[in-house]
Amino acid sequence: MVCFLATAFFWAVFPPYLLRRIVKQINFIGVKTTLVIVLTGTFTGMVLALQTYYALVKFGAETSLGPVLALSLIRELGPVLSALMVTGRAGSALTAEIGIMRISEQIDALDAMALNPYKYLVIPNLLAGIISIPLLNAIFVVVGVWGGYAVAVGLTGVSSGTYFGGIRDFVSAKDILVGLYKSLSFGMLITWISCYKGYFTGYGAEGVSKATTQAVVLSSVTILIWDYFMTSILLT
Image (cartoon, rainbow, N blue to C red; front, side, top):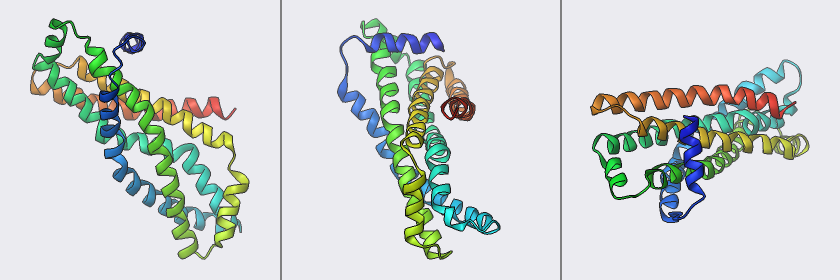
């Protein structure tokens, strides 16, 4: 898998750069996942605000609801949940698409025509994932904060000024960069694993189904494991 990724980045340096295909994959991975991200982010922020409020009330610290919710979304829940949503919606589709091209010998046809399969199938997906997932993470965090605001102010009675004032005072640029670095790495992990599993899928419908399942499971587990190591490195 490491050799597969290294080969993809090696060929990414040389033309043609296929910008139109990269934009098409950004639309597939990013734009078409936006609705899922908005819904997930909104209700994540709402339930997190509700649960956090009742925990903070026990310590008389309900005024800290805004920063606690924002930091949770920015550092952890935003990058991880948006990456998992992309894995389920786009990662599985990428694996199945490339896998079907493998079993129908379309990838062999590209080789026969002296066209590099990495340039057409792997590199556009890698670049699209690295570009799209940080943007989806930003959308997730914003709608999550507003979802938490709706519950905090409308349901529990926390002051609007207290909510946003705490976020302004306690959220720093470092926190935002932590979320950005995580989402960039998750974007590469998802597309790397999905493309690899599709590219080397077994033959027949059973091979494609196994490759798709393996891609989703491996991507999800890798995201959670890598999240721990990124957190331990970036927050020390």
